[in-house]
Image (cartoon, rainbow, N blue to C red; front, side):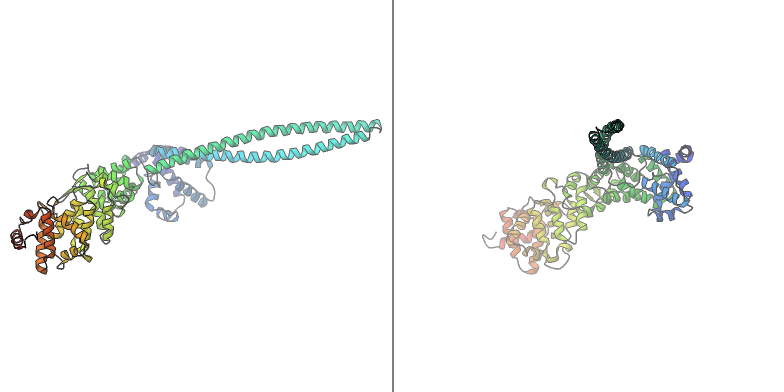
Length: 547
């Protein structure tokens, strides 16, 4: 069987498969499979595997797992009614190890360790059985020696009693005594020899046990190392360049289903550097598959891996924008209070252009995470507050666009409470952007803006008024194209003027103007393009000392 595989392994068919050693294993498995006389689809259903996995194993495009090989061998033996020759099984096992050494040296090392551990355990079991057998034999010899000693003592007693008897009787007793003495000496020698053999067997068992423990420790260490490098592995991957060649052939054939399956599997099974290398190639070859693939990377890889992938994608070029959008959107459901700081720390300085939006990758990630949580407003605020101070980022255009949608925050007048929380927690730039958007948005039921302010605790209302009045708090209205940077106090006082005039209740406006006088921003307020003149007249008519 091994010779047959080696001959076929050098054929042109094997070379076209990419890795000769893997293809050679596939050819042997195909030959075994053909003896079953069933289709690959039927066999896949029988062994509870995907048909594409069975196809890849038999075609040699993917190295079959040992479990797959063992199951196929059992199926062939059951079908034929006779076992395969042990030599044939061993040859197939060695072929797979040779292919594994080429495709995955680390996994090959692990397989060798497992084999050595199995042999060491068998050695220990044999030694254990030998020790147990020697203990039984030694006990038997000791009983026999005890019986001989008793017989010899009896002969001595008989000789003493019969010393006065005939010469013939004395000679007979002496001969029996000498015979028993010789037999006893021989038995004692056998016991000594058994003790030595038992000591050797016990030492062999001890060494086998130590070797098993050492191999077990090495195997666990290597398994943990491989697990940290590669989250899961159900099939041995061919080298990345060969895999890329296989995907390229599928693209030429238009085999979209197989491409999607293979890329999805590669997303979680490949090492990180190989996954990124594959992403570069797919992005350069086929944009549609690139977005699907980077989405799978976001969903299946560890968060630390996704962070590194995001940093790598930013350097791809023009296609990076679309890929980064797919990356952050697929990652959004996984973003939580526990990992948001790490994401913002690493992505806070990665620039990204999305349409007219110029921001950083962390901003887009937070926006998408907030979009997923939009039905739970408290959760949105909780996520923002979880970002550590040293991980906060700017600009905040995308996050402000997500939070600055009044329709979601008008419910129960919650917009003002959200702004208050942002100001108090130090997100002043974000609060300024959102405040401007709320002030400019006149949609929805009347008085929602002033009702939100009136719902605040007096201390919170003072905090919001003080924040809005300071001319230092400035931002861009992201809802308008080419909007200039402006002080929050301008749109805020304009909105108050309009709403308070409609309600015929100027108390909130008066409150804000008093705070603005303290903040020395009245002159800024009077420069309002929409209501500056009206505000100036209102201030003139006010009683002395009011402002």
